[in-house]
Image 1 (cartoon, rainbow, N blue to C red):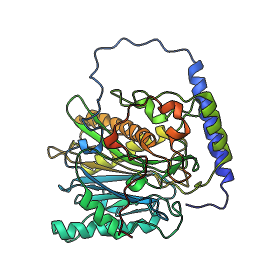
Image 2 (cartoon, one colour; image 1 turned 135 degrees about the horizontal axis):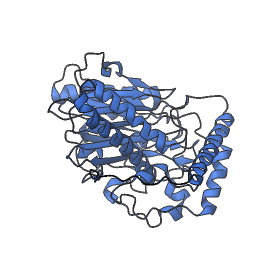
Image 3 (cartoon, rainbow, N blue to C red; image 1 turned 120 degrees about the horizontal axis):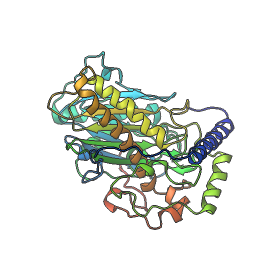
Image 4 (cartoon, rainbow, N blue to C red; image 1 turned 90 degrees about the horizontal axis):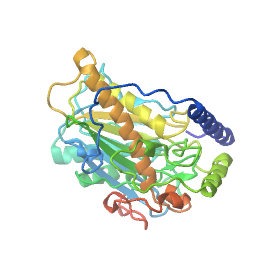
Length: 403
Protein backbone atom coordinates (compact mmCIF):
# COMPACT_ATOMS: atom_id res chain seq x y z
CA UNK A 1 0.00 0.00 0.00
CA UNK A 2 3.04 2.29 0.25
CA UNK A 3 5.39 3.18 -2.55
CA UNK A 4 8.73 5.01 -2.31
CA UNK A 5 7.67 7.83 -4.61
CA UNK A 6 4.31 9.53 -4.89
CA UNK A 7 5.28 11.79 -7.79
CA UNK A 8 4.46 9.21 -10.53
CA UNK A 9 1.08 8.67 -8.87
CA UNK A 10 0.38 12.40 -8.87
CA UNK A 11 1.30 12.67 -12.53
CA UNK A 12 -0.80 9.61 -13.36
CA UNK A 13 -3.82 11.00 -11.58
CA UNK A 14 -3.46 14.33 -13.33
CA UNK A 15 -3.18 12.55 -16.68
CA UNK A 16 -6.26 10.47 -15.91
CA UNK A 17 -8.17 13.63 -15.10
CA UNK A 18 -6.99 15.25 -18.33
CA UNK A 19 -7.96 12.20 -20.36
CA UNK A 20 -11.38 12.22 -18.76
CA UNK A 21 -11.81 15.87 -19.71
CA UNK A 22 -10.94 15.10 -23.33
CA UNK A 23 -13.34 12.21 -23.48
CA UNK A 24 -16.11 14.25 -21.94
CA UNK A 25 -15.39 17.15 -24.26
CA UNK A 26 -15.52 14.82 -27.22
CA UNK A 27 -18.84 13.48 -26.07
CA UNK A 28 -20.22 17.01 -25.82
CA UNK A 29 -18.99 17.84 -29.32
CA UNK A 30 -20.81 14.91 -30.91
CA UNK A 31 -24.27 15.65 -32.26
CA UNK A 32 -27.04 14.43 -30.00
CA UNK A 33 -28.78 11.36 -31.39
CA UNK A 34 -32.38 11.70 -32.40
CA UNK A 35 -34.52 10.50 -29.49
CA UNK A 36 -36.20 7.19 -30.16
CA UNK A 37 -39.94 6.86 -29.78
CA UNK A 38 -40.69 4.69 -26.79
CA UNK A 39 -43.55 3.47 -24.71
CA UNK A 40 -44.10 4.49 -21.10
CA UNK A 41 -41.26 3.18 -18.93
CA UNK A 42 -41.40 2.06 -15.33
CA UNK A 43 -40.78 4.93 -12.91
CA UNK A 44 -37.21 5.29 -11.71
CA UNK A 45 -36.14 4.55 -8.14
CA UNK A 46 -36.63 7.04 -5.33
CA UNK A 47 -34.62 7.42 -2.12
CA UNK A 48 -35.86 5.41 0.86
CA UNK A 49 -37.28 7.18 3.94
CA UNK A 50 -33.81 7.40 5.50
CA UNK A 51 -31.80 7.40 2.26
CA UNK A 52 -29.55 4.95 4.07
CA UNK A 53 -28.60 1.29 3.96
CA UNK A 54 -30.81 0.80 7.03
CA UNK A 55 -33.83 1.25 4.75
CA UNK A 56 -33.14 -2.38 3.81
CA UNK A 57 -34.99 -4.59 6.34
CA UNK A 58 -32.71 -6.60 8.60
CA UNK A 59 -29.75 -4.19 8.42
CA UNK A 60 -28.34 -2.47 11.53
CA UNK A 61 -25.26 -0.20 11.63
CA UNK A 62 -22.91 0.61 14.50
CA UNK A 63 -19.95 3.01 14.46
CA UNK A 64 -17.18 4.01 16.84
CA UNK A 65 -14.30 6.39 16.29
CA UNK A 66 -11.74 8.57 17.99
CA UNK A 67 -10.35 11.93 16.92
CA UNK A 68 -8.42 12.43 20.16
CA UNK A 69 -4.68 12.66 19.33
CA UNK A 70 -2.89 10.51 18.43
CA UNK A 71 -6.04 8.78 17.10
CA UNK A 72 -7.82 9.57 13.87
CA UNK A 73 -9.54 6.33 13.00
CA UNK A 74 -12.65 4.25 13.59
CA UNK A 75 -14.78 1.26 12.72
CA UNK A 76 -18.17 0.63 11.13
CA UNK A 77 -20.09 -2.64 11.47
CA UNK A 78 -23.11 -3.90 9.59
CA UNK A 79 -25.04 -6.23 11.92
CA UNK A 80 -27.36 -8.74 10.21
CA UNK A 81 -29.31 -10.61 12.93
CA UNK A 82 -31.05 -12.91 10.43
CA UNK A 83 -27.77 -14.23 8.95
CA UNK A 84 -28.49 -13.45 5.28
CA UNK A 85 -26.39 -14.69 2.38
CA UNK A 86 -23.57 -12.41 1.25
CA UNK A 87 -21.15 -12.01 -1.63
CA UNK A 88 -18.01 -10.00 -2.31
CA UNK A 89 -15.99 -8.45 -5.13
CA UNK A 90 -12.35 -7.39 -4.72
CA UNK A 91 -11.01 -5.17 -7.50
CA UNK A 92 -8.21 -3.18 -5.91
CA UNK A 93 -4.56 -4.16 -6.13
CA UNK A 94 -3.82 -3.80 -2.38
CA UNK A 95 -6.75 -5.34 -0.52
CA UNK A 96 -6.94 -6.02 3.19
CA UNK A 97 -9.75 -8.52 3.78
CA UNK A 98 -10.67 -11.63 5.76
CA UNK A 99 -13.22 -14.47 5.47
CA UNK A 100 -13.98 -13.49 1.87
CA UNK A 101 -13.38 -17.02 0.52
CA UNK A 102 -16.34 -18.18 2.57
CA UNK A 103 -18.58 -15.91 0.48
CA UNK A 104 -17.57 -17.44 -2.85
CA UNK A 105 -20.30 -19.25 -4.85
CA UNK A 106 -18.19 -22.42 -4.69
CA UNK A 107 -18.04 -22.38 -0.87
CA UNK A 108 -20.51 -23.57 1.76
CA UNK A 109 -21.91 -20.10 2.38
CA UNK A 110 -24.01 -20.20 5.57
CA UNK A 111 -24.79 -16.49 5.69
CA UNK A 112 -23.11 -13.72 7.68
CA UNK A 113 -23.65 -12.48 11.21
CA UNK A 114 -21.98 -9.13 10.59
CA UNK A 115 -19.61 -7.35 8.19
CA UNK A 116 -16.81 -5.11 9.43
CA UNK A 117 -15.41 -2.03 7.68
CA UNK A 118 -12.54 -0.49 9.62
CA UNK A 119 -9.48 1.68 9.71
CA UNK A 120 -6.11 0.41 10.89
CA UNK A 121 -5.01 -1.41 7.74
CA UNK A 122 -4.30 -5.09 8.45
CA UNK A 123 -4.12 -4.34 12.18
CA UNK A 124 -7.82 -3.52 11.93
CA UNK A 125 -8.63 -7.21 11.57
CA UNK A 126 -8.71 -7.23 15.39
CA UNK A 127 -12.01 -5.36 15.13
CA UNK A 128 -13.71 -8.42 13.63
CA UNK A 129 -12.54 -10.52 16.59
CA UNK A 130 -14.25 -8.04 18.91
CA UNK A 131 -17.45 -8.26 16.86
CA UNK A 132 -17.27 -12.06 17.07
CA UNK A 133 -16.90 -11.93 20.86
CA UNK A 134 -20.01 -9.74 21.10
CA UNK A 135 -21.98 -12.24 19.01
CA UNK A 136 -20.71 -15.08 21.18
CA UNK A 137 -21.59 -13.24 24.41
CA UNK A 138 -24.97 -11.85 23.38
CA UNK A 139 -26.28 -14.24 20.71
CA UNK A 140 -24.59 -17.48 21.81
CA UNK A 141 -23.10 -18.07 18.36
CA UNK A 142 -20.24 -20.55 18.60
CA UNK A 143 -18.35 -19.45 15.48
CA UNK A 144 -19.75 -16.17 14.14
CA UNK A 145 -19.23 -15.46 10.42
CA UNK A 146 -17.86 -11.90 10.29
CA UNK A 147 -16.05 -11.01 7.07
CA UNK A 148 -14.63 -7.56 6.56
CA UNK A 149 -12.17 -5.18 4.94
CA UNK A 150 -9.83 -2.40 6.00
CA UNK A 151 -8.65 0.97 4.82
CA UNK A 152 -5.21 2.44 5.35
CA UNK A 153 -5.39 5.36 7.78
CA UNK A 154 -2.37 4.50 9.91
CA UNK A 155 -0.46 7.49 11.26
CA UNK A 156 -2.95 10.14 10.16
CA UNK A 157 -3.71 11.00 13.76
CA UNK A 158 -0.06 11.23 14.74
CA UNK A 159 0.99 7.69 15.70
CA UNK A 160 1.26 4.47 13.72
CA UNK A 161 0.18 2.57 16.84
CA UNK A 162 -3.07 4.50 17.35
CA UNK A 163 -5.43 2.10 15.60
CA UNK A 164 -8.68 0.20 16.29
CA UNK A 165 -8.56 -2.96 18.38
CA UNK A 166 -10.95 -5.79 19.25
CA UNK A 167 -12.69 -3.64 21.86
CA UNK A 168 -13.76 -1.24 19.10
CA UNK A 169 -15.55 -4.06 17.28
CA UNK A 170 -17.31 -5.11 20.48
CA UNK A 171 -18.44 -1.53 21.10
CA UNK A 172 -19.57 -1.03 17.50
CA UNK A 173 -21.81 -4.12 17.75
CA UNK A 174 -23.31 -2.70 20.95
CA UNK A 175 -24.02 0.54 19.07
CA UNK A 176 -25.63 -1.18 16.05
CA UNK A 177 -29.18 -0.04 15.35
CA UNK A 178 -31.60 0.87 12.60
CA UNK A 179 -32.59 4.42 11.76
CA UNK A 180 -30.41 7.22 10.38
CA UNK A 181 -26.75 6.42 9.69
CA UNK A 182 -24.17 9.03 10.66
CA UNK A 183 -21.99 10.09 7.75
CA UNK A 184 -18.73 11.88 7.11
CA UNK A 185 -15.90 11.89 9.63
CA UNK A 186 -17.28 8.97 11.63
CA UNK A 187 -16.68 5.24 12.00
CA UNK A 188 -14.26 3.75 9.51
CA UNK A 189 -14.22 7.06 7.61
CA UNK A 190 -12.74 9.07 10.47
CA UNK A 191 -9.20 9.04 9.05
CA UNK A 192 -10.12 8.61 5.38
CA UNK A 193 -8.61 10.82 2.67
CA UNK A 194 -9.05 11.07 -1.11
CA UNK A 195 -7.38 12.57 -4.17
CA UNK A 196 -3.77 11.98 -3.15
CA UNK A 197 -4.62 13.17 0.35
CA UNK A 198 -5.92 16.57 -0.78
CA UNK A 199 -9.53 16.06 0.37
CA UNK A 200 -11.11 14.51 3.46
CA UNK A 201 -13.05 11.32 2.80
CA UNK A 202 -15.51 9.56 5.07
CA UNK A 203 -18.56 7.36 5.46
CA UNK A 204 -21.52 7.79 3.13
CA UNK A 205 -24.81 6.00 2.61
CA UNK A 206 -27.80 6.05 0.27
CA UNK A 207 -30.81 3.93 -0.68
CA UNK A 208 -33.18 3.35 -3.59
CA UNK A 209 -36.73 2.01 -3.64
CA UNK A 210 -37.81 0.43 -6.93
CA UNK A 211 -41.34 0.62 -8.30
CA UNK A 212 -42.09 -2.93 -7.06
CA UNK A 213 -41.00 -2.07 -3.50
CA UNK A 214 -37.56 -3.69 -3.68
CA UNK A 215 -35.06 -1.71 -1.60
CA UNK A 216 -31.37 -1.34 -2.41
CA UNK A 217 -28.96 0.37 -0.02
CA UNK A 218 -25.26 1.14 0.19
CA UNK A 219 -22.72 2.27 2.77
CA UNK A 220 -19.19 3.23 1.75
CA UNK A 221 -15.90 4.31 3.31
CA UNK A 222 -14.27 6.67 0.80
CA UNK A 223 -10.48 6.59 1.11
CA UNK A 224 -9.49 6.61 -2.55
CA UNK A 225 -6.21 7.36 -4.25
CA UNK A 226 -8.34 8.81 -7.03
CA UNK A 227 -10.46 11.94 -6.97
CA UNK A 228 -14.22 12.08 -6.49
CA UNK A 229 -14.18 15.50 -8.18
CA UNK A 230 -14.97 16.07 -11.86
CA UNK A 231 -11.82 17.54 -13.47
CA UNK A 232 -13.91 19.85 -15.66
CA UNK A 233 -15.66 21.88 -12.99
CA UNK A 234 -14.84 20.31 -9.59
CA UNK A 235 -18.37 19.05 -9.02
CA UNK A 236 -18.75 15.68 -7.33
CA UNK A 237 -18.95 12.87 -9.89
CA UNK A 238 -21.39 10.81 -7.82
CA UNK A 239 -23.80 13.71 -7.35
CA UNK A 240 -24.67 13.58 -11.05
CA UNK A 241 -26.63 10.39 -10.29
CA UNK A 242 -28.68 11.98 -7.51
CA UNK A 243 -32.41 11.25 -7.28
CA UNK A 244 -35.31 12.82 -5.46
CA UNK A 245 -33.59 16.14 -4.81
CA UNK A 246 -31.10 14.57 -2.40
CA UNK A 247 -28.38 17.01 -3.45
CA UNK A 248 -30.64 20.08 -3.46
CA UNK A 249 -28.68 23.32 -3.26
CA UNK A 250 -25.36 21.80 -4.34
CA UNK A 251 -23.76 23.99 -7.00
CA UNK A 252 -20.57 23.97 -9.10
CA UNK A 253 -17.67 25.65 -7.29
CA UNK A 254 -16.38 28.96 -8.54
CA UNK A 255 -13.67 28.72 -11.23
CA UNK A 256 -11.13 30.23 -8.83
CA UNK A 257 -11.74 27.57 -6.16
CA UNK A 258 -11.64 24.83 -8.80
CA UNK A 259 -8.37 26.11 -10.23
CA UNK A 260 -6.72 26.18 -6.80
CA UNK A 261 -7.76 22.58 -6.13
CA UNK A 262 -6.48 21.44 -9.52
CA UNK A 263 -3.06 22.93 -8.73
CA UNK A 264 -2.90 21.08 -5.41
CA UNK A 265 -3.92 17.83 -7.08
CA UNK A 266 -1.19 18.11 -9.69
CA UNK A 267 1.37 18.75 -6.99
CA UNK A 268 0.36 15.61 -5.08
CA UNK A 269 0.20 15.56 -1.30
CA UNK A 270 0.44 13.54 1.87
CA UNK A 271 -1.51 10.32 2.01
CA UNK A 272 -0.69 9.21 -1.52
CA UNK A 273 -0.44 5.45 -2.04
CA UNK A 274 -2.20 4.80 1.29
CA UNK A 275 -5.71 4.11 0.20
CA UNK A 276 -8.68 1.75 -0.35
CA UNK A 277 -12.41 2.32 -0.68
CA UNK A 278 -14.60 -0.34 0.91
CA UNK A 279 -18.37 -0.69 0.76
CA UNK A 280 -21.45 -2.82 1.34
CA UNK A 281 -24.53 -2.95 -0.88
CA UNK A 282 -27.69 -4.65 0.35
CA UNK A 283 -31.12 -5.47 -1.02
CA UNK A 284 -34.47 -6.59 0.33
CA UNK A 285 -34.70 -9.10 -2.51
CA UNK A 286 -33.80 -12.76 -1.99
CA UNK A 287 -30.82 -13.98 -4.02
CA UNK A 288 -28.67 -17.02 -4.44
CA UNK A 289 -24.98 -16.56 -3.76
CA UNK A 290 -23.99 -16.41 -7.43
CA UNK A 291 -26.41 -13.54 -8.00
CA UNK A 292 -25.06 -11.78 -4.90
CA UNK A 293 -21.51 -12.11 -6.18
CA UNK A 294 -22.61 -10.55 -9.47
CA UNK A 295 -24.34 -7.74 -7.55
CA UNK A 296 -21.13 -6.93 -5.68
CA UNK A 297 -19.19 -6.97 -8.95
CA UNK A 298 -21.71 -4.68 -10.65
CA UNK A 299 -21.66 -2.30 -7.70
CA UNK A 300 -17.93 -1.79 -8.29
CA UNK A 301 -19.00 0.18 -11.35
CA UNK A 302 -20.52 2.66 -8.93
CA UNK A 303 -17.07 3.30 -7.49
CA UNK A 304 -15.59 3.67 -10.97
CA UNK A 305 -18.20 6.31 -11.86
CA UNK A 306 -17.69 8.23 -8.62
CA UNK A 307 -13.88 8.41 -8.48
CA UNK A 308 -11.09 8.74 -11.06
CA UNK A 309 -9.13 6.49 -11.14
CA UNK A 310 -10.48 3.56 -9.15
CA UNK A 311 -9.30 -0.02 -8.55
CA UNK A 312 -5.65 1.01 -8.71
CA UNK A 313 -2.64 -0.91 -7.45
CA UNK A 314 -2.62 1.42 -4.44
CA UNK A 315 -6.28 0.76 -3.59
CA UNK A 316 -7.82 -2.38 -2.12
CA UNK A 317 -11.32 -1.58 -3.38
CA UNK A 318 -13.71 -4.19 -1.96
CA UNK A 319 -17.52 -4.36 -2.11
CA UNK A 320 -19.65 -6.78 -0.09
CA UNK A 321 -23.26 -7.59 -1.00
CA UNK A 322 -26.11 -8.79 1.21
CA UNK A 323 -29.64 -10.01 0.37
CA UNK A 324 -32.08 -10.01 3.28
CA UNK A 325 -35.19 -11.23 1.43
CA UNK A 326 -36.86 -14.46 2.52
CA UNK A 327 -38.89 -15.35 -0.60
CA UNK A 328 -37.82 -17.28 -3.68
CA UNK A 329 -34.17 -16.58 -4.37
CA UNK A 330 -33.31 -14.88 -7.63
CA UNK A 331 -30.72 -16.88 -9.56
CA UNK A 332 -28.29 -16.24 -12.39
CA UNK A 333 -29.31 -19.65 -13.77
CA UNK A 334 -32.97 -18.74 -14.18
CA UNK A 335 -33.68 -16.87 -17.39
CA UNK A 336 -36.86 -15.46 -15.91
CA UNK A 337 -34.80 -13.70 -13.21
CA UNK A 338 -32.23 -12.01 -15.44
CA UNK A 339 -34.15 -8.80 -16.09
CA UNK A 340 -34.85 -8.28 -12.39
CA UNK A 341 -31.27 -9.07 -11.41
CA UNK A 342 -29.93 -6.70 -14.05
CA UNK A 343 -32.13 -3.90 -12.74
CA UNK A 344 -31.12 -4.48 -9.10
CA UNK A 345 -27.44 -4.64 -10.07
CA UNK A 346 -27.67 -1.36 -11.99
CA UNK A 347 -29.45 0.37 -9.12
CA UNK A 348 -26.86 -0.97 -6.65
CA UNK A 349 -24.08 0.66 -8.70
CA UNK A 350 -25.93 4.00 -8.89
CA UNK A 351 -26.77 3.90 -5.18
CA UNK A 352 -23.11 3.31 -4.32
CA UNK A 353 -22.07 6.28 -6.50
CA UNK A 354 -24.56 8.47 -4.63
CA UNK A 355 -23.25 7.20 -1.29
CA UNK A 356 -19.74 8.30 -2.32
CA UNK A 357 -21.03 11.83 -2.96
CA UNK A 358 -22.81 11.87 0.40
CA UNK A 359 -19.59 10.81 2.13
CA UNK A 360 -17.70 13.72 0.59
CA UNK A 361 -20.39 16.26 1.42
CA UNK A 362 -20.83 15.05 5.00
CA UNK A 363 -17.09 14.89 5.75
CA UNK A 364 -15.81 17.59 8.06
CA UNK A 365 -12.32 19.05 8.17
CA UNK A 366 -10.12 17.64 10.90
CA UNK A 367 -6.58 18.64 11.82
CA UNK A 368 -5.05 19.85 8.55
CA UNK A 369 -7.27 17.68 6.32
CA UNK A 370 -9.86 19.81 4.52
CA UNK A 371 -13.29 18.63 3.49
CA UNK A 372 -14.93 19.13 0.11
CA UNK A 373 -17.25 21.81 1.48
CA UNK A 374 -14.39 23.72 3.12
CA UNK A 375 -12.32 23.45 -0.06
CA UNK A 376 -15.25 24.55 -2.23
CA UNK A 377 -17.45 26.70 0.03
CA UNK A 378 -19.26 28.17 -2.96
CA UNK A 379 -20.49 24.67 -3.88
CA UNK A 380 -21.98 23.94 -0.46
CA UNK A 381 -23.24 27.39 0.57
CA UNK A 382 -26.84 26.49 -0.28
CA UNK A 383 -26.67 22.75 0.30
CA UNK A 384 -29.61 21.31 2.23
CA UNK A 385 -28.12 19.40 5.14
CA UNK A 386 -29.64 16.71 7.32
CA UNK A 387 -28.14 17.17 10.82
CA UNK A 388 -29.06 13.67 12.01
CA UNK A 389 -26.96 12.14 9.23
CA UNK A 390 -23.87 14.31 9.48
CA UNK A 391 -21.00 14.32 11.97
CA UNK A 392 -20.77 17.50 14.07
CA UNK A 393 -18.22 20.01 12.85
CA UNK A 394 -16.54 20.07 16.22
CA UNK A 395 -15.35 16.49 15.76
CA UNK A 396 -16.75 13.10 16.64
CA UNK A 397 -17.28 11.47 20.01
CA UNK A 398 -14.15 9.63 21.11
CA UNK A 399 -14.67 6.13 22.51
CA UNK A 400 -12.61 6.78 25.64
CA UNK A 401 -11.29 3.64 27.20
CA UNK A 402 -10.99 1.85 23.88
CA UNK A 403 -7.56 1.00 22.64
